[in-house]
Amino acid sequence: MLLKVGEKAPTFSLPDADMETVDLATCLGKKHIVLFFYPKDGTPCCTKEATDFSDHEDDFHRHDCLLFGISRDDCMKHAEFRDKEGIGLELLSDAEGVVCKQYGVWQAREVDGHKKFGIARSTFIIDRSGIIRHALYHVNYKGHALEVLRLVKEMNS
Image (tube, rainbow, N blue to C red; front, side, top):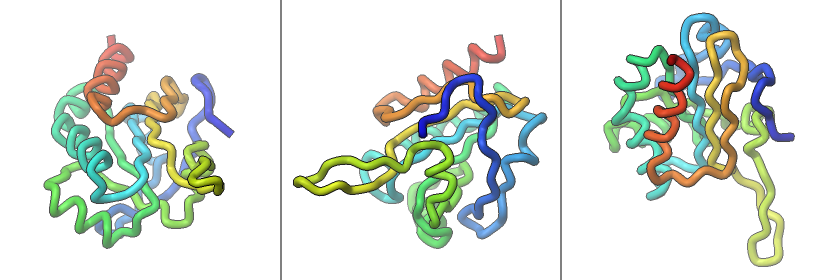
């Protein structure tokens, strides 16, 4: 089920690349939150998306916003990806896919006549009170980080 603007964002606890637990509920009330879900560490499109968000992390922080990238890759793979690409933001591991399902990004698609499940590249902007302000499904990675930054800036004005 897809989440909609105005709904309360599902809270979760997931490990980051350093195996430290990030609890979304503890972030609420303090800052806006951007969650971007991506299919896989190290693929060309996912690398571009993650490095674009990372390159603008300071801009997001200036607008009182935390960034988290989420995929089903494990913590070790996230750490290798982060270190290889110089990614500064936190990458969270949803190895079981529970959070992907909660956010409606674990979706079926048809591949060679077979149903195959995977993460639909999607981004959520959550305000301080935990309400989804933007739910962007099936996004194009090109220019996406700057588009999300623009939306965050609009929330603060």
